[in-house]
Image (cartoon, rainbow, N blue to C red; front, side, top):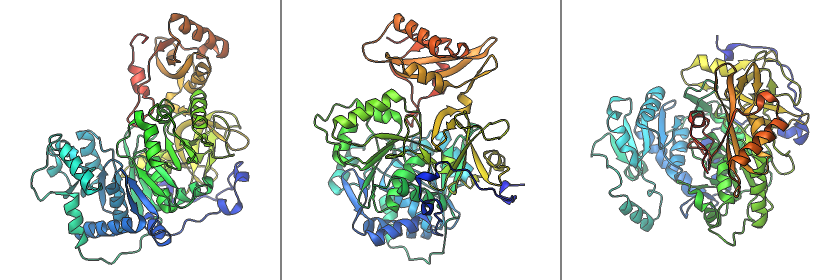
Amino acid sequence: MSIFSIFYKKKKLAAPWAKYYTEQDLKYKIPDITIFDQVKASKEKYPHNVAISYMGRKFDYTYLLKKIDDCAKGFNAYGITKGDIVTIMLPNVPEALISLYALNKLGAIANMTHPLSAEEEIKETILSTQSKYLVIYDAQYDKIKSFVKSTCIQKVIFVSPGDSLGLIKRSLYNFSQLKKFEHHPKDELYINWRKFMRFAKFSPEFERHKYGRNTPAVILHSGGTSGTPKNVVIQNRAFIFAAKGEEIDLIRLTPGDSALAIMPNFHGFGLSVLMHTPLALGCSTILVPKFDAKKFDTLFKKTRPTCVLGVPTLFEALSNSTNEKHLDLSFLKYVISGGDLLPIQLENKINKYFEDHNSDARITQGYGLSEALACVTMAHDHVNKPGSVGIPLAGNYVKIIDPATRKTVKYGDTGEIVVHSKALMMGYLNNESETNDALQVHDDGHVWLHTGDLGYMDEDGFIFYKGRIKRMIITSGYNVYPSHIEEVIESHPAVFQCSVVGVPHPYKQEVPKAFVVLKEGYKGLFIKNEIKMYCKKHLAKYMVPNEIVIRKRLPKTKLGKVDFNKLKEDTGADEE
């Protein structure tokens, strides 16, 4: 039996963080609307505010809504209706958001997928979601040509990053791309975006049916707690609820402010926090289709965003940027790190960078996952503690449990982070077993998302993230948390960054292995021995790394997180 058909008498949930919110904040009720309705409401309030900035071109809300309405007419004329799934596989370009909201207006679902997916990944996402249409970057044609006609796809719409540029820039871009990729053949299966929008503009108007907060809106992608790829179905309510929570927390954001969207649209944080929330609040989203870490400071100077969110490595890149000698960052209000642990030394380095560039902004952390639409907790302004990922957004609830017993642990004790929220996913598409593993009804009568993440909560309700349960190392029967070892090693004056993984051992089962990036000016065997002695002084014997390896940099995933799988396979010698 599905957990959604079981009813319990619900108990009142503990919320030690409630003192940071008003009673009105905590009792927010989600209106029965869609994300399209939210953007349309912003257009009614702020018709001439900039909604989207893209490569120097600005779209106000009136223009954006016109494009969305036309696009919806086109999809409707091609037969897209409520519940249909369309795969959107684009970088951060306006067409991705125009398609998303057009589909939402029709009650259809946008399957947001990585634009650089491999051929088999594209085929798998199309088949697993039974997508009817594919909106894809034109350079990806060679990845779909061999199989697309044998799938359920009825139409492929090709988008170019140049489509939303001005005439001159678009012409220059198109000329530069002439020989870079294979062009699709003239075939009724394929149509380019500009031709589709001309068709859409003159398509007949249609009667829009009423869709509300419980209508599915988006599919995101997650490995969940089992690590296997899954399609996460998100309702409109999650986006609406998240936007309200972020409005409450980021109180200094006002209509007309802007968010720099360097996180991609297929990532929950990017789509929700940096794209939809700004549009729901009358702000603008600055779309960055291709991020160049070496020119981060130049990007700031050109775009002047009010709010920026990214993984720690992006801010590390900013703090190392030297392109702009007199960069003034006084316009920044919020800088939020998420998606990975932010080492305290890097936090201090980034804050020093802001201070040196005339900004009173300080980097804070947030925590979330796709299954709860990305943002579960957030630190902001004065509601912050060093090392924490903040407190739950208003209306969210978090508790820390013993994974084996599901009993809540004491404040300060590490356990699994579980989440109760109005932003929880509907479930994994066509996967009831995995859904019921992730969403479980506890003795208090509430549905809780089991995140597979480790952390602890203090008595004020601040959450401290400690890593994945799967990263936990069991050595000689002891539970070892890599994040604790990393914190100790990173407190050594010679160490800039450290990541710890578990590697097989003949009789201890696993032992910790540390990969260390040294600060400039430090190198050699002497430092390794010193770090080893430092570990012996500050860690229990079973926690001391069995091996320490020096690296110039740590491998990263496509999203800029440390790639622990590659580290597990790394058997190389030190890099000097």
